[in-house]
Length: 118
Length: 112
Image (cartoon, rainbow over all chains, first blue to last red):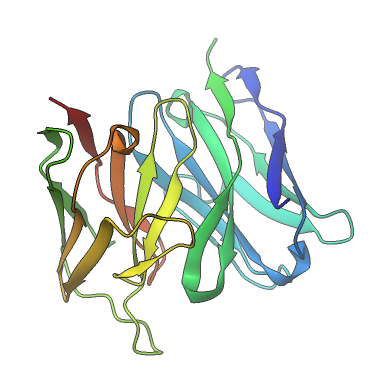
């Protein structure tokens, strides 16, 4: 069964750091680009970042550029999002998403909640 | 950035009746391979989004054929031929041609 399972998340103070993990199983993780998408409470979806299947390219939303870093370990089938200098507006549920052929975002994790608050 | 504007934002529908959601883009977005990478997603309360349709009109495996997507250029439409109870939730359009990928604001489908 293809799935993405997230770890990490929680409550963190403004200015601090947090790392999210996303473990893939049931498919060839190393063959797929991966996205992070977030959803603030009661709000819509916001694309955050993408990483190519081999890690060779990465793109970020302007709202997180310079603060967040996406990475992956294909030997461990795991995707990461390192979030530094966190702000209140980063409070959201974060999803990792598989990027398939035809640029389909076709497999989503269950999401993990990040709350930035003092 | 490409801005996607959905309408309506809320759509009360009677079971068994059709529903239609529109998504208008601020610009065209054709990838270098000639394709327009435009998707529709559905999110039920408390659940992650689920991809329904990709490349304007292609249904994901397992999506009922009462769902159809159409459009071109800057105007796209999702139609549900006969709404069922399981169709409630929020529908999002999304473009995956250019970075940043962007989403519409969402349309809430509810049963009258």
